Length: 413
Picture 1 (cartoon, one colour):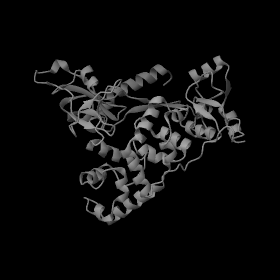
Picture 2 (cartoon, rainbow, N blue to C red; picture 1 turned 90 degrees about the vertical axis):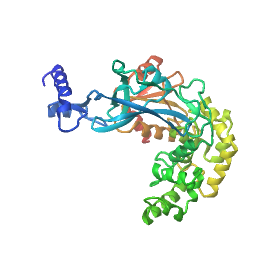
Picture 3 (cartoon, helix red, strand yellow; picture 1 turned 120 degrees about the vertical axis):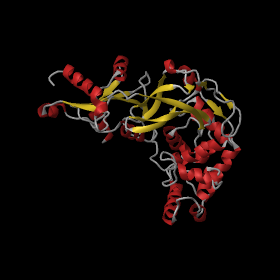
Picture 4 (cartoon, rainbow, N blue to C red; picture 1 turned 135 degrees about the vertical axis):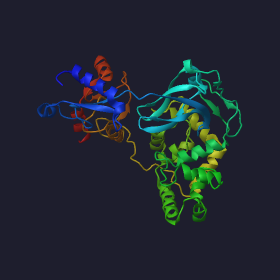
């Protein structure tokens, strides 16, 4: 191709021919067709500058929405899911698609029995695009969210400012089961071999009722489960035992405290060092931390004020689960003689030699504070390739700006 118009025409021709291919493709890679120019353009840490991937529009398919099923998550949110007449979409058979909440169902005027257009968002997640209202027969049924939890029959509530309906019964079996699944997941305690199927089995047979029970499981109990042989049980018990040594942030995230994600869990663990100190922290002490806002602080205080939570933490201690932070300690400005100590720094653009997260960790380890936006309180902006509005704002405020090389010089001192 000798022009961008030719490239666009070529791409569009394959959008039309894509369904006739004997294999699945989701896009086309466009490259500069000159080795000399490729060498001149070079690469970033992640990809070449002389090539780009163009993704085709998601394939859309018509099918019938047969029913709407409800599920209860670990936070009590009740989520409607469309049950579809199975159909091939982007290379796989799709029979379900999340409808997220009642407002979306009303907005798209979805009824049971409708002919609907579905696609995979990003060629991965199935979603209902729209309803073919002109194909309605009159036999379609309007859907209404229930007033009671489908798992425990407790009254559902809608918290102010949220679109979701929630079950607020702390003993709801669905929430407990989903909480257990979350606790063993990769970003939480990461118990290898203890997936959703096994957790559901253990919960159904009342072998585990809370997360502390996981650490009390016996060989005999596990061997009685379906498809669990001697080797699988030995490996699982070893994996469970190994997670007792996890650093505190893993446990905090695994407990599923509302609004506390993996990043906030690490911040809390670094700041308080032990579970006991965190449990005793006041709202004022929590909101004094840069990344903890009022709502999260309220959620943390409320969670640890609960007597059942205190008892659970005591049980976890009793079975030997670690309650201390084991990662790199945050250095205070007073303890560090680094240039970054005590300064508020913003990273923007693409860094080629260090990933953004790696740079953030290194700066924070030297006593710096990495913020997400530029303000008058910002001391320094480090601008990588394709830096945008943050760099423009920094320049307008007269804030010092470094490139990546200057940052690396300072980090390596």
